[in-house]
Image (tube, rainbow, N blue to C red):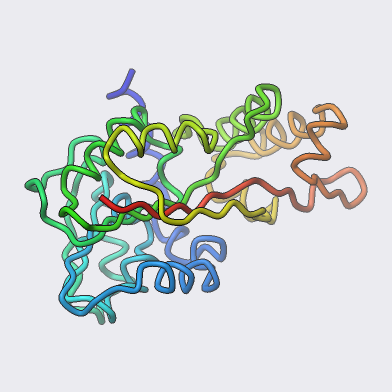
Length: 255
């Protein structure tokens, strides 16, 4: 199942890699600026950005550090990202699996991963790997969509995410992330959970292959109970979804 899931990820992100480089939500400057504020990167640092996608974190950190290694499972995504960031000469592009990183122990001063872990089949292994390649005293900064503790709310979210994107695995609740981080000797320094708004037409078309898929996502969301739709703040124009909101966690830990 793990290899099948990773194959889906590669297929999904090879379809339209440029969409992630130009995505407004992935390029959110407030979010990216907060990464710099939290990390306080140093000019001597080597930083690993896991599942770099469109390279937004790598681009943000590159001016502040010695080197950024932008790693991703999908070769076509990395090729697109290198083209997107071709004016930055201190970024190294490496094909790598987040759950089996091709780096030695104690290599990086900081490790980041943003809006990607919900695609990982084994998030616990991912955290273990991030900790392994991080130097003692180094910083791990993770950003991802998170599910509520309420089972029905979590199932609703993970279902509409998977209908939209077959490579989606699962958004975890905050407490599960905290458990994995603690078990990997990563000690929490700072954490924030905030609401993130999806522009529904843009969000759903980034991954959907056909109109039928878009209709299935919309029908499923609209078919949810009032409790479900209210929690995710589903906004309508007539009978069409305009936007919805999910929870996003930013958490920083020290090794």
